[in-house]
Image (cartoon, rainbow, N blue to C red):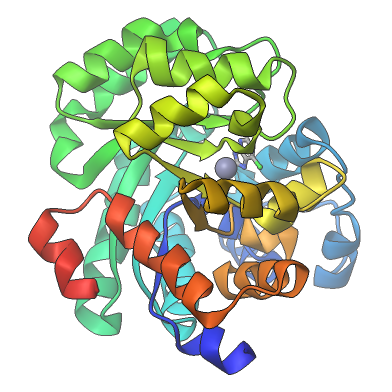
Length: 324
Ligand code: ES4
Ligand code: ZN
């Protein structure tokens, strides 16, 4: 089964590029930028990854990305991920980036996007991995800052497939960003957002995302199961969910494998992804292996997960078909 999973052509739709920053590269970037890290070694840094909730993870995640300063830093970050993706037979990836996590500490938007964009171009040419960017707004910042970031992205629209929403969901519901999402839609961006697993008001947040905002898909979203009417709406619209089993195990007490199984049985387009692989210790292949082990998924079921991922990918029909 391990070999079958390794050989499966994959599509990754929920991956934070800043969450792919491995300790080795973090040390290298710190050295390059003349920064001191509060760890003596890679091992010590990994040992400090002791999160058990979303806020405890986010603290380490934002602290870790402070070593990213220059265009080559962002290039190296994305290129390292894309190399890893190629090794795992990922053929196509939609990659989240968090511009506000950088602009808020003085790194210009242009620096971030130029570095990422150059890596995407090189990866397609050299590694045969195609990728697009999804710009995420940080939901624990004011919506005005998200709107300003949206406007700043417009000259780079050609490189950004759509927008997302991430960071701390508590007290930051989807409707806080209704105006930002409306403008993003008008600008031609596709829309997704995190509806994290077992958040307070999880089902209500999913309802807002689907009915009030009209997103094209949902990141995580397994609490959809709590509302049968919403399941119907998601099925009717053919919407997909980008689930991340190993991530779920860190920010809640479970991978939510049984819920993922129920969603698959209901006919929802479920996809399996890695979220923040450098922090959760698992790229997409390991996520598929863990879920397969928990649910005894068959080869056909694994193939269906990837087929659905290509199906809900933000690609033109003829490009998707070429992957099938
Ligand atoms: C994230 Cl696991 C998770 N949840 C919310 N926002 C995020 N950004 C990066 N990883
Ligand atoms: Zn995520």
